[in-house]
Image (tube, rainbow, N blue to C red; front, side, top):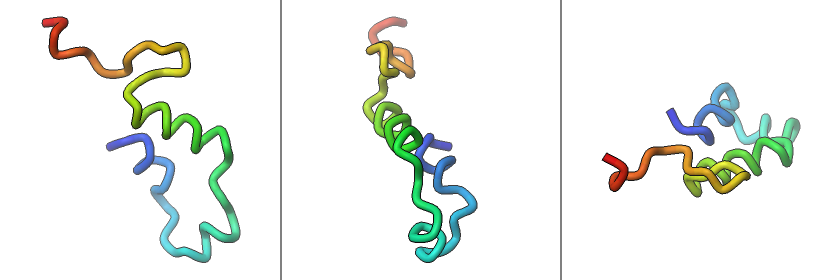
Length: 51
């Protein structure tokens, strides 16, 4: 399961999003995860070339 999916798990309606928005830190971590890197620039998934 992806990072964004985990963040959104349990939010079942748009009303929940309006009442309890995602924190900026959670959004940042999801965006870094989608980019495949940590904030340090390290990859979170192994490269295909490393094998």
